[in-house]
Amino acid sequence: MTAASPPEVLRAPLVVEFPFTRSLGPVQSAFLTGLREGVVLGVKTSGGAVMVPPVEYDPATAEEIRELVEVADTGTVTTWAWNGHPRPNQPLDTPFAWVLVKLDGADTALLHALDAPDADSVRTGMRVRIRWAADRIGAITDIACFEPYGGLDVGEGAPHDGAFDDAVHGIVARARLDYTYSPGRAQTAYIAALSEQKTVGERCPSCHKVYVPPRGACPTCGVATTDQVEVGPAGTVTTFCIVNIKAKNLDIEVPYVYAHIALDGAGLALHGRIGGIPYDQVRMGLRVEPVWTEGGRYPDHYRPTGEPDADYDAYKELI
Image 1 (cartoon, rainbow, N blue to C red):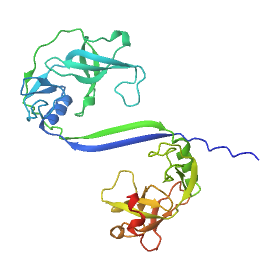
Image 2 (image 1 turned 90 degrees about the vertical axis):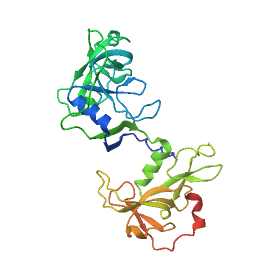
Image 3 (image 1 turned 135 degrees about the vertical axis):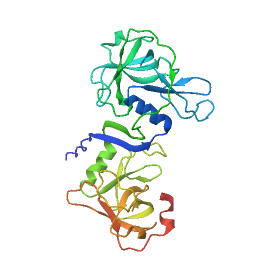
Image 4 (image 1 turned 120 degrees about the vertical axis):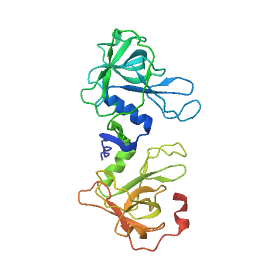
């Protein structure tokens, strides 16, 4: 009899992104609007230092600071690192240097890209200047990059009132992590079981807790978990929250309930959406079961089973 081969370990691209909209105070508004107009503004601290990029509170005294100073678009590299393999959405699509540049008139350095032919052409102390983007919108990307410059230091900055027409008052900040994810042996088996509408965890041989989803090792005992255990399909709501803000690209009407669900036989609660019941009737101890859509690779949501609620003592250790 031939032993069954283990499932192929999965790999897939994964993007974690947190775009959010933030408002700008007077200092940041002036800084970004200035970039749109081809002007670099810093802010003077109570000790007389000019900070670029500007901040709204003095890092030494925590006092609010608003005295704006216009600095030059030329400066000096204080330190650098060569990037031989640019990633998508970086400032340049050819090899470049990440540089910290102290602009003339500033006392702190600004991080950006330097367009240079090779690493040998970059050095600490080299003179550079801003290459402005052709289309500017009031963002740090209005600085396309820095480029080598042969001129001298232009001296101190000049006071600026920060007044511009049609000032920028808000931005969308996009934090993004783009990578290839491999779930490993334990979670590959878990995902394979889900494709058969089964939920499989792994039991720790020491403390006997069943982890769902499995992690390959017990985080408490530090030993490998290889004993697979099918749990559920029903479970108990341990805690929950009511979601009132609609997420981008998620076709679910608000409000809806997202819950921790302790599947029968599991030693750890997992996340799931609760459906088939008004949101204001969801409660701790509610007994639920998975609902699968045709061709679905995981439960679409969980709905009440109709059983009596579980006693608190039965799930209190899983909250």
